[in-house]
Image 1 (tube, rainbow, N blue to C red):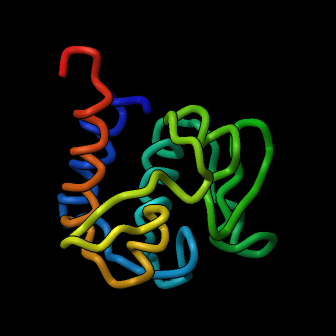
Image 2: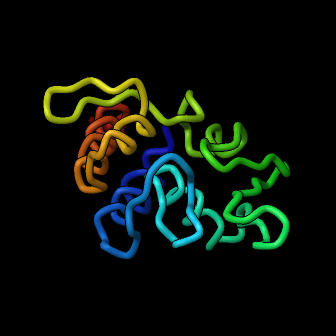
Image 3: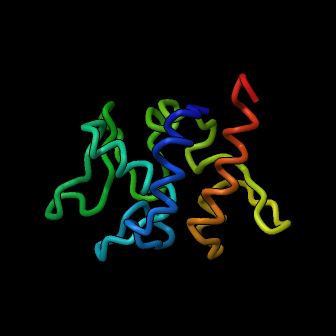
Length: 129
């Protein structure tokens, strides 16, 4: 896991209130995001990948390797942020084990809860932990 990205960018963005939470797709036409879409948006803001044009592929994230997705992380993006699954890592929130972040998001877990779980995973993987 790219702990610097997770701890310094992704988790703070999830907690920031800047993003409205949505389900089932990375980004919806009403500018709601799933937790994975927030990661894609952070990368797009740095010029790493981009969102598709509304007329061609609305709300589709196009990765640096030109893979596109509406529901999960493109493989190259998953590798870049250091998660094995394109759906995000497994996590436990409120005593419930989710197979991936996407399912936790779509089950209605808040961005704050997801950020807490993601932060715990990242901290456990840090070499200085």
